[in-house]
Image (tube, rainbow, N blue to C red):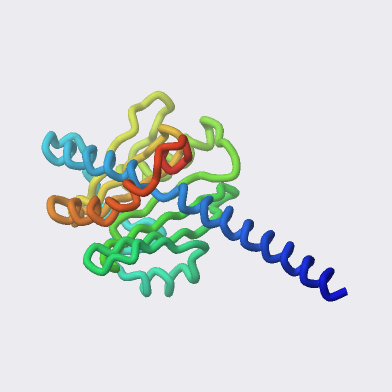
Length: 214
């Protein structure tokens, strides 16, 4: 009888650990590591060549302010579904994940912090593919909010910046997402972000996982 209980408990523990590991892998593999480097290059190019579309409206998705702390975000959004911490005291990188649904569209919200300051927000559409009409509705919501002009299917996605050089990037390479990058992340700040990501990028071998897609 005791052996049966021990075996049952052992099976339950293995199942729980396995489920937890799968959950952790799901979120970890969706952290923007390599892709955010591409965003830096895109934003730097926009600054040098002045091709960004300018908006008079302050960019603050979900009502959050760039530079705010993890405590401020948790006060606004509650407990995160998943937290990644590189546990580095000099260049501390933390990533918080939330799930939100707006007008029947489910979003995976990714918030990245460098030394407890919010510098990146990613809104990924999840759970199902969206058609061109739904995609156009999302893009139009963004463009009309910040640029006050309609978007037509076939138009190039604009890169949008406010007076603080906070940037909106509409991204449709692998999954559809709207990404927001703080204007304070330039020069030395970018180097610190890359330094904070350095060990993670080196530790993960290239095995075709989603990690490398993002």
